[in-house]
Length: 293
Image (cartoon, rainbow, N blue to C red; front, top):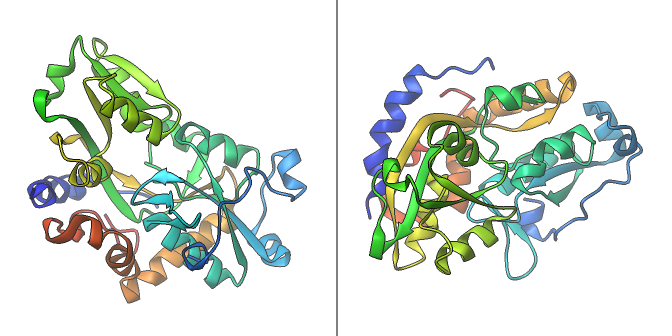
């Protein structure tokens, strides 16, 4: 399946129109609790860069079930593209890394209640989300995809009218189909593992989420095909911080800009995604360096 090469041109064209104003865990950290001990968590405030450094620890929210971007392996260790970046952030800040598992629908709430300092959970930048959190520069680009059983492949979103589409709550897939395809019946789940199980069990006709993820999943799950490889706009994936936390936002932006000199996110891809996508992937169709789409 040469899917990424097929969509590379789509990404490249859309990227020209896009503009944004803007693992210690992979070495052995295990899943953390869903809350922090810092007093800021109770007040719903945020921690500045100086406060994070003084505490000696940064808390970053990542997925625990979205392979290959954020997941927990069989040893109980976080792995993935986002986790690799989280590890580098902690290293360059000179602090320990505490990873907190989040669900798609809880990402904003975890920032608003100061349960985490940063969200690095495959977070797509949208106007609605920008009203609630502050996004840093992008480090990846993505569109939506639709995966379905080989016995009834969905090749066009229109084919889903009157059918059941599986989505994860709080994702761009949920909002996209709600706004653009009201005749599609959405079956919503809190976690990605639940959504994939529902697809495998035949509880829905298809599943939609980021095309990068469904393409990887279909490669490892015979009997399923990504019939819609690129749907909607090409969007940015970026870190997010609590609204108003300018010191941390500026630090992350400077970090992403500086990391371009060493092509950090290409190295991240090689370390975490290359083995998944193999030769079928044009990494430049996914990776963003220096925040430049």
